Length: 197
Length: 169
Image 1 (tube, rainbow over the protein chains, first blue to last red):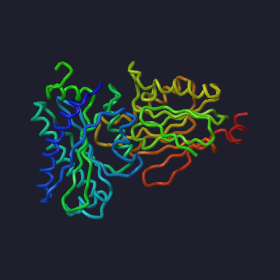
Image 2: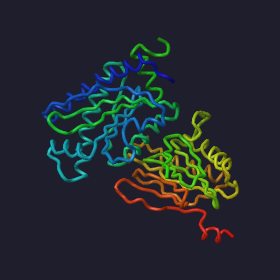
Image 3: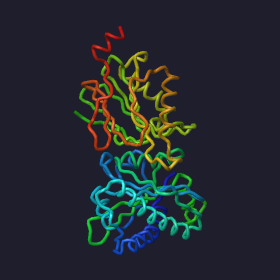
Image 4: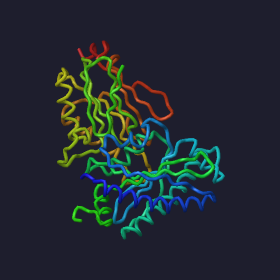
């Protein structure tokens, strides 16, 4: 399956609305505004996917939220260690790695749910998030393990990447939506840009 | 020394002493290495999933297609079929609670079954658990290492050494 520019633009716009909703939810949780960078939609060969996200051997904190329903997908949040600590300190959690991961999981839950909810409304697809899982490990191992689940049917990895910054802090993080192979076709279909369109 | 990074679904084989084969950040994926027990020849596949089910775009991506391809590639550059052995790293369950994401265990089983079917013994394996790993194969000193995030790189296997050759004889 190959995607053309028009399809990638539509997916990026959908991701923009989803992540806008997510950023708003995070801002009200933190009581601080959250900047949303212009999202990207990347359709990549599987082998290129990890490098497009970052350095595979870097240690990062991540929150993984599986999505089920009409569409199988994964929401993946990636934080560099300093950004993870900064964000946790805004929530009053400091110095305890276990507590920090748990706080990140909670943040992921709010971001993931609001993102998925906005996308579901837009596409009239029923999507539910699983409870979040938070880990700290090598970026490559995390991203590849997420992609492996959707790699059975396709050699193409679609990454909808939104980056956010918490205003007035050095806290930046990546927010990725990774639809499964069949999910990409379904989303495009709902956006009026499916194969049949 | 040049590092050949073997990315998701890829395979690389080499007989050059200066080369290092690298499987970076292996989570549920498996870095599957096949060496010639006496020669400076090695190949690595970055296996992503257990079965191809006939979907054979990238041979290295699936355990069932990666193993025959690794055998073809090492024998093509001088390895002897009857002296091959394997080392595997990875197959972790990265996200403990997310059941459907547990591909790691299935990958390991598929790789081990495939190796058995092809009559290739497993020389060493560092698998399972919940942590990502990086695997490096140093052709020059015929050494294979494994490193977890935040930990030291440790040697998990060597091949083609005097000791092993004596033992084999």
